[in-house]
Amino acid sequence: MTIQLGDTAPDFTQDSTIGPLSFHEYLGNSWGVLFSHPKDYTPVCTTELGAVAKLKPEFDRRNVKVIGLSVGTLADHEGWSKDIAETQGMAPNFPIIADTDRKVANLYGMIHPNASDTMTVRSVFIIGPDKKLKLSLTYPASTGRNFAEILRTIDSLQLTASHKLATPADWQPGEDCIIVPSVTNEEAKTLFPAGFTEHKPYLRTTPQPAGS
Ligand code: BEZ
Image 1 (cartoon, protein in one colour):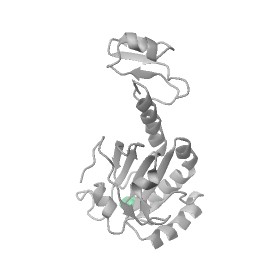
Image 2 (image 1 turned 120 degrees about the vertical axis):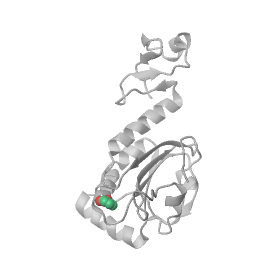
Image 3 (image 1 turned 30 degrees about the horizontal axis):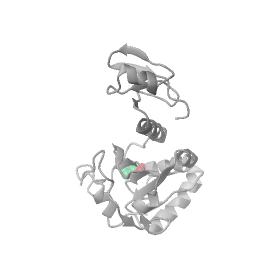
Image 4 (image 1 turned 90 degrees about the horizontal axis):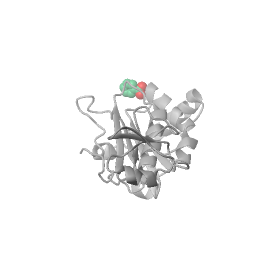
């Protein structure tokens, strides 16, 4: 199955390191990040899980619940977590799904048979409080993900969910934003009291609204 942007993220209940996890119920009104790992006890995944554990306060600050997934047993997840603590300085402090029957991996299309018919790719799904898919990324097993980029995309998604704005290439929080084309210049004067610059009729920028 392929899940596309705007689709409702499929619900499921599966075992995890915090007990049986019912996805939609667990997310509640939070944003969610569901990310897959090809296999337990593998080097790149070990570094990724340690990196996300260290960034947990950043996810919390954005009201985002992070959920890992690997096609391994709970016993393997638990043993591996000790290795992650030992080698990365922090054990995973978020649930990791034990997707032994690949229920969730299949539901979310995390297995790409021409890459590997047994291991999941490195998928990232960002889900909004409305349970709709807002962003997905697919990395190969050989390339560890950049979680600062995932936080950056969450900042953009949260900003643009509540303002008629988009964010430009390489945008970082606090930098100017783009006014979406459907907003007229008259409307922009009201919506963006800090003012805006019209570089071209279709390219108008404004400071990021305060408090957003
Ligand atoms: C890793 O996480 O290190 C990894 C997993 C599968 C294949 C290659 C690397």
